[in-house]
Image (cartoon, rainbow, N blue to C red; front, side):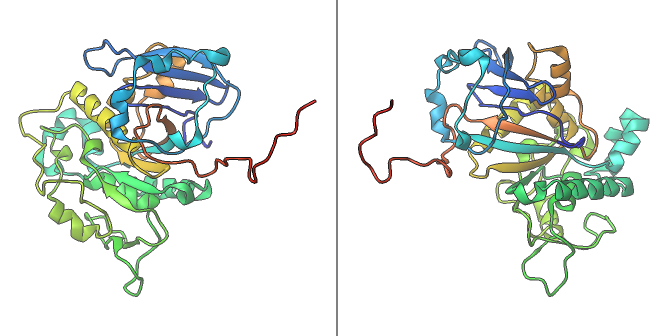
Length: 347
């Protein structure tokens, strides 16, 4: 792991939830299970366990299976001295990224009331923000991460879309290149050249991972019809409404509502076929989603899980599908006994 990627893997199952947070420095893993009596079903109890073996990652199983899961699934979690073993194909790696610096960040750091100003509507990245994007792009390329990510999911706001295509997109775009560009020249007043969609994963915009909605003008998105010409290769098909019906000028989404939305988003990720997914989102979304976890573990571990993200910070985590919400089958397992025959007795 580099300093841009936190030393943690996070296992998660929505509804009946289990997270595993692994700290590579001392091989400590924290398995998190839900307090099923909780009113919100998001408060978790933790069990501390030791493991010396690395944890690997991949995809999930069908949504209806979650209803068949019971708390008895977690009764065997203390076996083998607290170690946990999971089939590889029931795991998925997610790479969480907070957007780079936007103009709203600059003004908001000076005066918090600036977020109420209409001129910050759907704020775009600053020149410094684009430098942050370029630096993270170099990191994901040098670390090999860019070759492993199979899908990029982005919040449908300008600053997250610009960050996503700048970090995970292809190289420069020219008219003679086949395929649509991910971003056209100067999209969102960026003063940046066009970005190609070749040799990079597909991009998907998703409302569930956007920032708090309401009141703050910087968190109101544009109509989807305005984004499409600027980012032609991004898939906006999962967004039902062209205009932003979620944003209200006088009602701000609560932290609890955002956390619930974050859990729904993680649940949705488990239904995806991709094994490694990058998610480009916002500080508030990350804080209030991850804060649901780590309450009973060592305070240092809790802080590592829940500490706020810097602009353009990336942390990698792992989701484990214990209840078969997803539908992936193993790709590396081998049935054995081919050809079949009698086993030789052991000595």
